[in-house]
Length: 503
Image: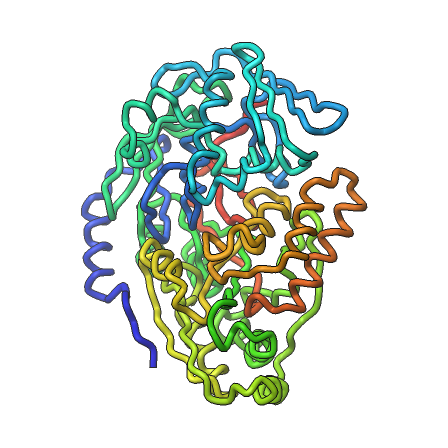
């Protein structure tokens, strides 16, 4: 039986639903509402997770941004020059860019931002980790130095978590900056009502194209039925993370629905604790679970089985294999490992991804069928969930991954490099010095064919080591009202942005 630590009960769902309807204002083409499935603890870009990047992308500006194809293109950068040895990036900035507090977005501000993130221990530090020095060459020119060539730098600097903070605001606000952020994006932060919404307003001083909407309200609505109702009643304009059945009902109600190639859902396995520290057990867990049946019956077909640690639409991503459903092989591996009645502790998110709690329950059923006594803990509080997983007391836990940079380096650095063992997002404490060497080699290789070969080898070795219970790549659905005239969707990360990039 599952031990349920949090649930969105019918009473709470009804209360939240009633509050949203009661507080609804007359629709305006200039004021839109975006429904998110969960809240997050901070708006500081040094931290990552969930739907936070979508909000960050609207408030923060960056040196580079992604276009619809997840290609890094210039944002604040007017021109770039990369040295012959590929270790110095000289960036000239757009003129007259301002933070929301009126201070200039200049070379000194860029240096302040990079130095700040490198001095912190936040999960976004990995984006700037290759940078060894930042030099201000002129008020509008900055040079970024790396120890080795680093071809992924442009992509890293386009990540939502590479958003630029106002040095003046950080100095004045200190620890409060994360709840009163000041940046230079197309929308400025207005207010945050905990548990309810974040309000943003169009920043008329933005250096790029004028933002199309005067205000965007990001509202936290975990209950999928409530999100559906609000879209059907035209009380909201964008809603994320619907399943195929909800998509059909919304379309029947004449609500526009977009299909998205979404995130990869996996269950990270614990290398520090028995029995998952045994390769045979990790492989057995993969053979024990019928992914195809879960996709068909729990996800109603909205997914495809995972066959690599890197998604196919990320640079270098390709299939490495497939753990088919083979319970007899799973039992044989467990017997070989001397594990026939071990206890597992499985943590699963609840109401964060489509039917995620049900998926966790289904996985536990398959594991019990091969002799693994599996306890399921469902948690809907994302911040609490991450804190609990960070303590390391788990056998496996739900994690999703979408390439927020379009480059494999961020993925393999964060999830597999031994320097991150026991930290976000390598809570499973994966350590392999040979993999470390390949990760570092791939990061420093400029030639495309050589880089592809390195990431191919990384994927094959990792897949064989079974660091995850490989599950599926989601197919997601997003609902839109007729008021949405400007929207760009980044697949993989599975979030939209509601403005046009600077030309």
